[in-house]
Amino acid sequence: MSPRTYFLPTLLLFLEVGFPFGLLVPGGDTLLLALGALAGEGRLGLFPLLPLLFLGSYLGHGVGYALGRALGRRLRARFPEGLMRRAEGLLLRYGPSALLLAPFVPGMRTAVPFLLGALGFPLLPYLLLAALGSLLWTQGLVLLAFFLGKTVSPWILWPILLLLALSPLLRQKFRTPEG
Image (tube, rainbow, N blue to C red; front, top):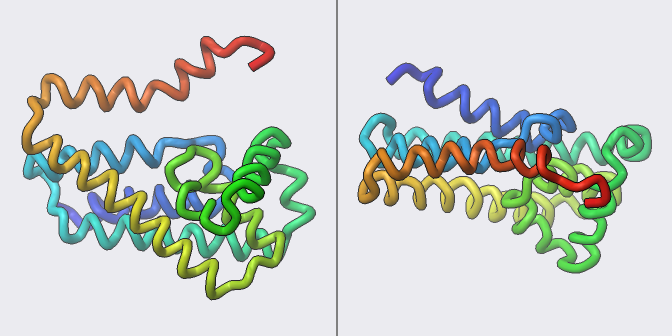
């Protein structure tokens, strides 16, 4: 496999987690599941994949925190208000451990690191929680799909992954104006 095969997904995770335009192109979960399924089918190697995906997510968390710290109020005004309310609610409900849950929620994985940086959350605890959250998210989803890719027929697995990839678009299309 070409090194680009492994670095492109790493870059995509980094951009999704670390920069506000990650809000516009969610899909990290689907990407991780697809990569895991490909590894399960033997098309990709798990070894370069797992550490690189962790690194992309973790570095993205660091950039999001740094942007929040440096540009806090100015950049916060550019985030969708509903998303910021949801992120603040997550932080109020779960405290710093929200950083462990945020990677699993599209939009939150971008907003929570930024918000913690803007709030001046201490750096060392942030880095530790970001590492654990990135580890759980990237390794958990890739390994889940890896084992499914080894045991479930591609004729069943790939349509399910396609539905997961399209679900945000379908949810948006069929959402009522109030919700």
